[in-house]
Image (cartoon, rainbow, N blue to C red; front, side, top):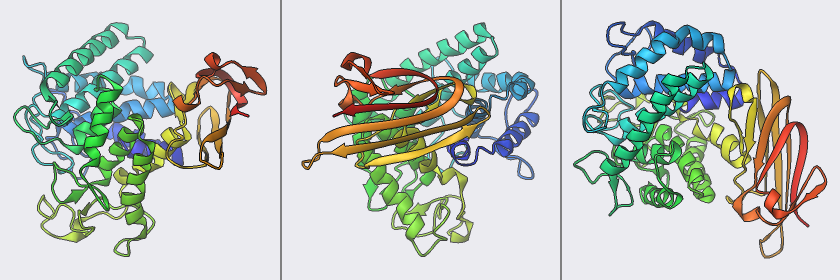
Length: 413
């Protein structure tokens, strides 16, 4: 729900399977406790607080991309009950005590765990947004307040100053890939400097094939690494994010031990298929999926960050274009469709012989009736720009408000 649904949106926008999966989860809710199953039938597994959280996060993703208000209203009673189920696990420490231990295979996820609490924070912020869309302002405010309190406790409890990262729980010095990636991406960090420190710390765990997860030793997880890609972009390390894609996904696309077209569920630090060989897969590489939707992180990351195109309200009624141009790419072009129509962006850099940016050109095409903004990279701000051929001074060229339609933005000579 955190990786596969955004990838589905930017590629095919065929979200019916997402809606059906979410409907299945909410239909199978425990009416007494509010617990959601980890998976649908025939497995219908129980006992995962993090999978429970992903279902709730996926609900927001589905609504953001589809604008399906009728469906949201239909599941709302069970959705709110499911949010309350997680909130009830927050005790007098101000943190969630994770008791449903099933997870993506990581070790040590129970108790006052940073990964679980980071996911709860994302649940609360997205729940507040959904409640606003349904005009339930009191509930939205309550969830937003709880999110603010959790963010404060998260930083007090898990920030390890000596490492410049968040630790896995209250007693360890291990700093996991998942929680630190989530912390940047979901805005649990308190400053951009803190995000940059975490990005640097995550980079220390790489080998030639990508990030080796400390929370699941000898493992490279494309699922969690998909969040790490986004975290590096958010921290301003565009080149690092693209380097990660080339290492991990380049390996999967070119290795002769897989199909060279779809993505592995995971692999060991030396590139073998014995993913999770000691963690439930019985040392049998046949368990490893070779076409895993959870491993499609770059599909949406390249659109949302390199291209810079995101929707900021349901169906893209509002949108943002904030391209990341510092990764070494000379240009990018792409887009996606929503029920409102086509959203497309194209940008290109022209450089001098010594590599300095001489000119930046961007074209954006969005449905009539929408509203959006172009946010120029910091390196291009303050230099003046042309918007649809009209000159604007530098102060007007950081965030440029635009209506739907076709527009052009350029900086430089």
